[in-house]
Amino acid sequence: MTVEPLTGGQANTVFSVTFPSGERVILRLHSRTDGFAGTVRTIETLKVLGLPVPEVIAHGHRPDIDASWLVLGWTPGRELRWVVAEMTPDQQTRVAEQIVGFQRQVSALPQGDGFGYVPPGTPGTHATWLELLATHPRLTEASRDIADYLATVEPTCFLDDITGKNVLIENGKLTGLIDLDYVCYGDPLYWLALTHVGLVCDTQTEFYATELIRLWNPTPLEKRVLAFYSALMADDFLAWFSADESLEWQRRMSAARAHWLSVTQFAIS
Image (tube, rainbow, N blue to C red; front, side, top):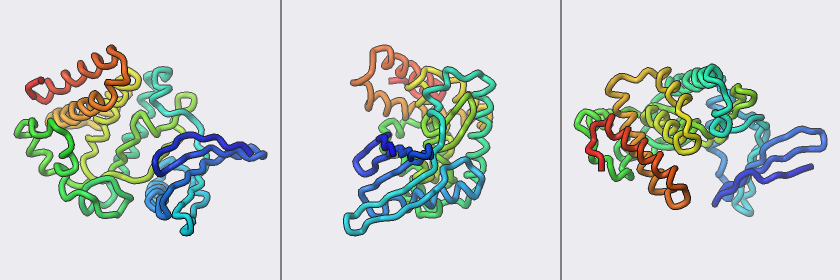
């Protein structure tokens, strides 16, 4: 048996386990007894919708050491952000069509009781969408119509992190979605913005993101809201990552932020 560490964090560690038979699974360990309760609920909810999620093979916990474990079926492929530059436009469009279709299905689930990142059916951690966005310093610069839009956002269910990350691709085709610990209740445009900003950050490639936006078909106001979200996220990316990135990266992200700010009709600062 071969055990290969994949990722690790403060509370969660992920391994690839390959048995002598050749069967491969994912083993996740969490430092809390209830660490994967939400993950199992999220995956099972999405499985019922027909989304290509990993199979939950087994899960459990050890109360004596306050830890839990989860075994998932293996999904082949690499994250989209690492292969998108090798994909043809037609392949990118096809994956974008599938992802938008998945999000439409998830958005048709019952609305949440509150806003935020929680397992399906769990009350959100924020009373309003604006409360969730409050960590963004530029939030108060929103134009009146965008501010009015944000104040009326309903707690729609969507998958916030199937962006350039967590979408697995093999030979130009989608093979599955991973890291599904929770959903988000709020504005699905936020996911579109995160995908766009993330791809500009990681790949300099925008075609896939613009195809997602085209297929989502936002209204003129929604396009400005989308640019608003993108500008907020670009601010975050520049604050978080600039010290470790090149001058070219900083210029690219700053130029993208300036473009999004111009679309929202903010004063650029």
